[in-house]
Each structure stands twice: as C-alpha cells, then as structure tokens.
Length: 313
Image (cartoon, rainbow, N blue to C red; front, side, top):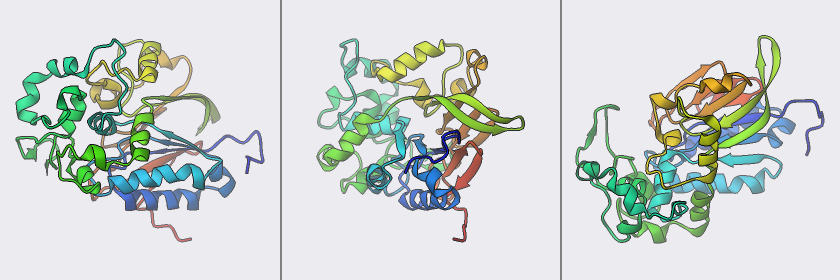
C-alpha cells in the first residue's frame, strides 16, 4: 500500500542497539506498530542502528526476527547498520570483506598486539586468518570485572558468550562458524557501515524541516573530511582494524562542523545514552543492560518510543 498522500513526509523509525534481547525487540516493534498510523508504518523507512548481538541471551532469535521483516512488511525499507559488536561477530565467522589493499588481517592484529594477553584473544582454529575484532570477540578476557560499567564481562571484552550460547556452542568455540546458519552469515556479510538519505523531514518549532540524514553506528569523526569518511564507510574497508565510526566515543559524539551548511541529521546508537540535541540523535538508551529499555525515534515527529511503553490497544 503506497503512501496515499504524496506530499506527506515519509515516516522514518531509527531503532537503537538490541543486544540480543528478543522480547525487547518484539515489544518495541509492537509499540511502533500500535502508535504509528498503519499506512505510514507499512511504508516506513526502518533504520536499525546496529549491535544486534552480545550481552542479551537471544542473538539468534533477534537475527531471525530481522530476517523475517521484508516478507512480513514488503513495502517498508529496512536498513541494517553494522555495529562494532556485529562487525566483530562477522569477523569471527569469516564473512567480512578482504582488506582492499590486499594485506591480510594478520597485519591489523600486529598493531594492537600489546593488548593480546590482557584481552585473551581467540587462538583457536582459523585465528591466523581472522580480523582483529573477531579475535577479541571470541577471546577470553583475563579480568572478569568491567570497572567502567560495573558489570562482569560475559566471556570476552565484547560480552560475546551469550551469542555463542544462543547458537548452542560454548563461548570461544570455533564450532560457532559451523553453527551459524547460512542466512545469518549472509545477514552479517550484508550489513552496511553507513546509510544516507537525501530528504528526511523533521518537525521543528519553525514547522517541517527538510534534512539530509546520515545513519552510522557510533558517529562521524571530528576534524576529518566527511566525504572521505563516507567513501571509506561505504567501501567497508577492513584494512583498518578499529573503525572509529562504529566504535569511537568522544571523537564521534558531535556532528562534524562541515555538515552545518546543509541541515544534516546524524543518527547513531552505541553510546549507552539517549541524547537528542538539535539534529544529533543518539538512540541507545538500553546499552545492552538487562534492566534498561530499547528505544526508537520516529521522524518527522521526533517522538521517542520504548519497548517498556505500556500501550493500551
């Protein structure tokens, strides 16, 4: 069913980090479907901001749910961004593109080898050909307590143990490569590092504003040419061992100054916070904590919807 009113702005839903919590994803989806007008919802652009795996117990079911959406909602557009956790999962199961400069992933591991001992990098079958983040993801971290978060690590520095277990194998087992079904491998291989839209509407005090939109898991780097960053992210160039746009913190928090000329929404997850400041949208209220909600922002209204919203049908 196409949008009956051609001048009506398209609905865009940006969904924060799910981190393996299937019930949160299902409840959030039901709430979106309940609150948004059906014709708008059925033709909406849905942007998932990444980090589908780790921490929560149901990564496998989360990916199944995401894979089922195009059949159930054929007129929606679904964009699946890679988070830093998903990139590491893809690296472990061997579905990341090869580095564009023809180097192998071993080179990238050398750069960070001073951390190998502390982070207990994966050294099982296939490790020599594995991307650095895959090795960190499937490793066994030596310290058990994450002082920054005040939580115990789950297996690795990425809290990947629940992901292994959701596929029926113990944490750090090379058998995960065989246990992950082909359609899940394709899902991990197809994730994009950035998504751009030329015309997205937001409601502001001065009425409806037409903006560009850039969706990227953590954000765009400060002080670096934006076009060059976008070219790199679109190419998914894995010769860089740590992709700042997917895993940075303070350096990717703000909208780069050069985007000020043309109003540009920059929407991300990753930061463990819900932060809406002008056109900078950081939608990660959950951060993978069991007791925190998964949130989404709906455009043009800028309304925040959570899995915990108790909606009376």
